[in-house]
Length: 287
Image 1 (cartoon, rainbow, N blue to C red):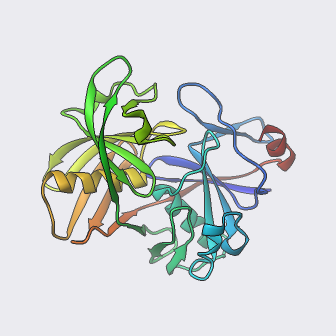
Image 2: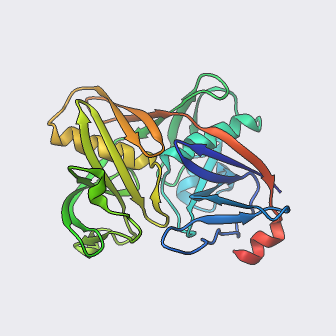
């Protein structure tokens, strides 16, 4: 079975082109979940998640199959602990590069099916930056976030379409080591878990952030979290017009364009970091 490892702004993703639908990844355990895939030469490949390339018309989910008229390929994304994700802003850029590298699509503009709905993407040249139409975020009621035994912060909620709780801090160190899953109140606010973004203003239309992703732990970047953070920051600044924001993360810098009506476009790179083969029987045995 052919696999490739790709990364977008620091997020390594194992992207198997033909994983059977009954296979589910299992995390490696520890405070930070990590998908671990063994190679024939005894090396281990670690990843934040797994993406399965699926013809949209063959998807199991009726909602996804309904996108087949607009998008030929479905990005079946799973977190490292095996849980499903509605969308992955970095993963979709990886997905686009994989489709082009394997000759399934050509550079240009096209659509991708996700559990969060159709996402329109564009890439000008092979290996270039990918722009993703991330849609319009849906504000949620506020909550509070507690880090370990430490401080409790007010948080603004946003669906993008993954659930996010955005916390403003004076220093990114205020988030602590993020080895434990942040707690939230009220607990019923996020029944399926939540990604938590810790955000600091750097300057006009410029923020930096760290993120704890549900089902994974702290990651170097989070595409939907970036978009949620920018839109919450816009609300905090009472910004209503179209604007471009810069976002710095441990994994690098990306830009986010937001229109006056909230339509959000995420732009950034994705690169091939390796290609490898995984034994399908091992995947079935470990699923």
